[in-house]
Amino acid sequence: MRAACPALLLSSLSGIAVAVLTTACVREGATVVAPVDVTIDNADGGASAPLVVTAPPPAQRDRCSAHLRAAPIKTKEGCTLDERISHGSGTLFFPCSGDGPVEAVFGEHRFQGRLTETTVSLALTTELDWEDGCHWETKQSIRGELKRESGKHPKLVWTYSEAPVSGTSCFGSCRATADIDADELSP
Image (cartoon, rainbow, N blue to C red; front, side, top):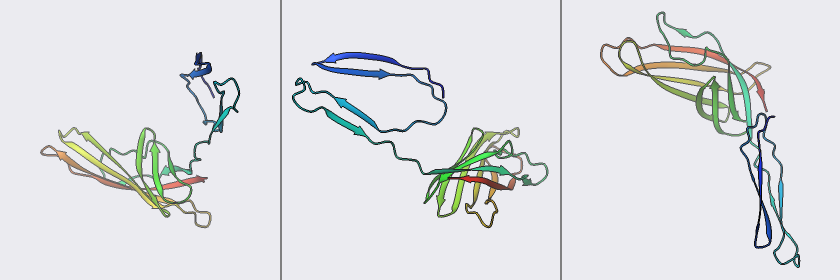
């Protein structure tokens, strides 16, 4: 963990010492989560007990992850795809229990969606101008079951479709599919 940090300001307000910590920290690594106790001395010279305020730690995130690796993409010959899965492995983030939002990250690209029971469904839409002079939209999805069966890793399916949004004399559209292995499911 690395931090470049603080400046401490002290002042007095009606006999109460006030300390303000200002920071511009850059941290690497996991955030430390701990309860915080703050004691405020009374301005009456200590005649009454100090007030103690306890802040609970933030809620623990129920988030698991899996390593994603795409098999070779299947598409017709001559297709050039604006795809995001073949340039390296990805990571799937999902709730460890129950339903909730999911995200698959491949480099800087993020598929977003939902986990319902054991079914995951994610989508990514992109737009681009192509050499045919047309403006295109791609729709990419990842779907499948996130459950282990007798030592096998879950298999997800990626699908790709594209269509021109504007322009004339556009090239033909392409479709594609690929299997995605989800390894190392972690709690």
